[in-house]
Image (tube, rainbow, N blue to C red):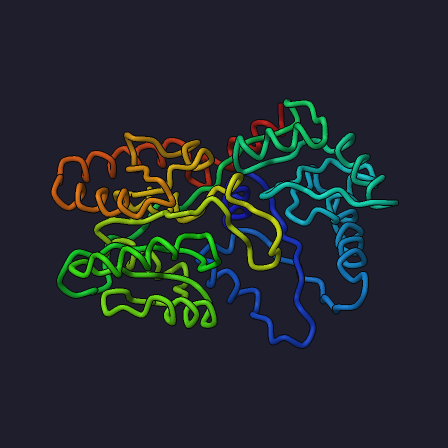
Length: 346
């Protein structure tokens, strides 16, 4: 949704997606409101019914619909739709957020043909680019590296969190995303208030059972339109990714080596001092000038980093301002869309 909004500033855009049969889906207007984006592009939804092979069938159906729209470029986040469009001879740019597993048989043959014929692929980190080049023998010129991004905040309003020093974590609560660190910090730093924004109710209850401390506050999912009010209220923001991160719909794939966390850019956009895991993929964006980097497995380093920022206001301000400057120059959705379009048009 954010990328469609950014693309629509210079191009006519139509987003093609699904409405899931019998699930009480939101109206199109509610979708724009949910993601807090302008009504600057069209949304077309095809009704999806689940059955054996349905993801292939409906990807083919989406490709057929897209085909008759006569677009100049088809930008995809659904690999099978992109694969069908490429094999129909269309100009396709597909965005990957994790490595692709090669299929056997006809799908494997179509996948190989996809990589020969696709106009470009977009990836969210240099690490993922290197992996794609290795796995599929792609020419480097075909691969666009575009880290994720955020919007420029439109408010400085803060939610009232009460007195004290407030440290925030925003994001999913999957294993490896960082609650392991947040919970330990809350347990040993009882004079600091910790806040967790995000997660579904099951995940929240699971972490509460392990880390149900008086100074660890679970706020649950907050819609985009209200998220700034929480981040603005935090004194420090945490990005404690672990070396292994699993995603909700794939318990086998480790995305830790390839990720480009949205919350990293949201923290930067809000001029917040960031304490992050010292991982190679995060250091494609973060460094010692715009954050403090800690060993993701050493809780003492995280405690020391917090103590340093509490006691050193000059450092706290300098890394915040540098992070914001890096964000404005490189990591807004508009900058991301311009970078991708420039590569596509060359």
